Length: 304
Image 1: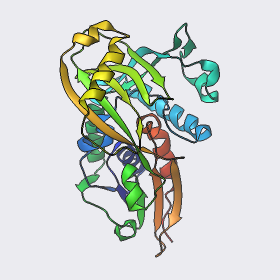
Image 2 (image 1 turned 90 degrees about the horizontal axis):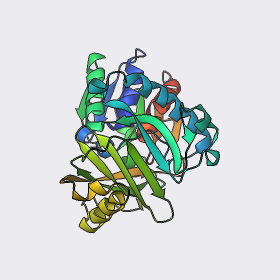
Image 3 (image 1 turned 30 degrees about the vertical axis):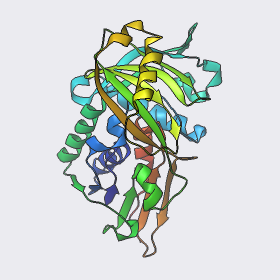
């Protein structure tokens, strides 16, 4: 079996399959550290992903895994941190929210203790877990899913599925981030303006304080925009003034693989081999990774 894609969805899916005894290889056009997943913030929270009735179950299953991994933060990159979702109300969320431990209504928004994932560390941990399971991760560019030489192909190509499937319903949602030296911020904060595509959020990570962000539909540029970066810092500094003078360490841009709904289903290739799709997770790939990976693994059956 070959899993196409080495972002959070591809690596997690490969881990689940391999640890169920399936012989797996991973093919990817770029290493995990160069994927959109490596750029992510990355706070567990369903963001820009549909369909909501399914997202809640996937997210809660993933939450359970991250809560366990948070016992080994240096190894897994997962930590539980307190924070606030300003402007979000508990009564405006679907039923899944009632099952998030400690999620409660505060004066400014929702208060929660949620997983915050240091993505470079977490992706490296996933690769090490694959290596321990005997899985080979190869850098290969796939241009035709039907040409992948395996009885079962699992498509976790993210935004690449737009051309690979092809599926024009997959579209980029550009996100820009600024990483600064942390001036002493220990809790995360999110305040999103869905009408303008801008937000203010900051996530304390071991490598610095990650500031965001933007959500530009159908924007493909991976070049950081200085004016956008200035706006990000200003919005975050309006919440925590000490951020204004923090030294900038890096600028990052990622393209979220948005779709009207996650595509998680199985098909037959023209020659009868099995193709399983697992892509289109928008801004919540980290949030639903384990739930989707387990469902994708359940769709895998011997071809024939």
